[in-house]
Image (cartoon, rainbow, N blue to C red):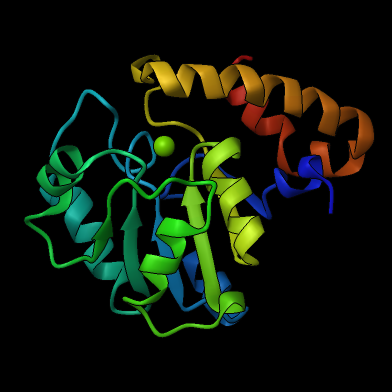
Length: 184
Ligand SMILES: [Mg+2]
């Protein structure tokens, strides 16, 4: 599988609220690994709201849930430390490090895991390298991206162009809406 193929998500939805969780459950997914920044909350927010926690709690009746963030301890523990969800900080996505840590906190086979995140270069690439399913979502608030993420976005644009050229059908099916939704 080429690098470009590994950056193609299995699904794209506009937000974590739009994902058809029930359908995914029926397809064998039992574990959700959520990215934090710009997936659940924007960089402008620092704590999960009651609504966000309740949404995840409702999901946790059906799925095992963990939160994997490339951000540091301070940011991640402040955001989700008041919840019961296991979390990994400094996850170093797209490497396998954080995913392997998260695997110790759940009981799931790789084909039962879905990674949900807003970046091709970290969440989607990392998930595909692990053999997990991947769901790309629209960033909560892209203007709040940090420096390192802004750099990733430039790389992402380049990769999107390559995917569009090499895999036009997959691009139209899974990435065109992502590009349009962000007016890239
Ligand atoms: Mg993110």
